[in-house]
Image (cartoon, rainbow, N blue to C red; front, top):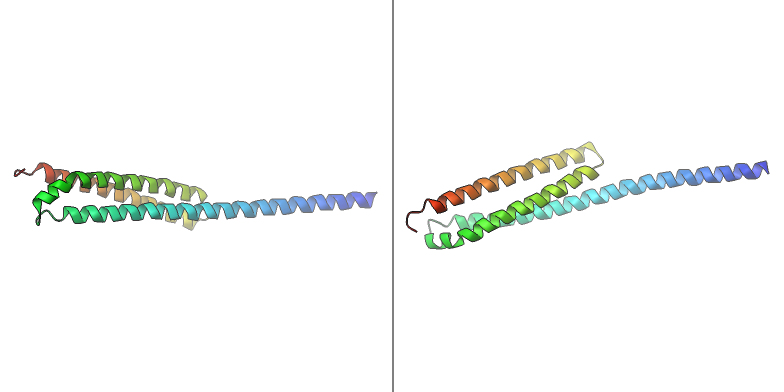
Length: 142
């Protein structure tokens, strides 16, 4: 009977150790998956914002060539700049999620750098919007 109890205790301990190790491995796997999924989503939002900014910049740079077209595109450009800010704010959310799910200091530092970059892009977009508003409002030939 005593030998049976020892075997049962050994089996319970082994199952417990396997469960703990399996749980830890699953948690690390899950965190890595969520980190890279959030990385992919923030990269997607950053690319969309970059593409929109390129469109706005190209459209707004044509003022010397076609002034009437520039003023017609002005409301659309302002809407695109607001859309850029929305994409960048979404990107900030995914970067915060990256920081939450990071498993190393390097991943946290990288997410911090991405967050700083996003803050700069939002600030730059605001400044560019102010510039377009100043250009639009200082027109005396309208």
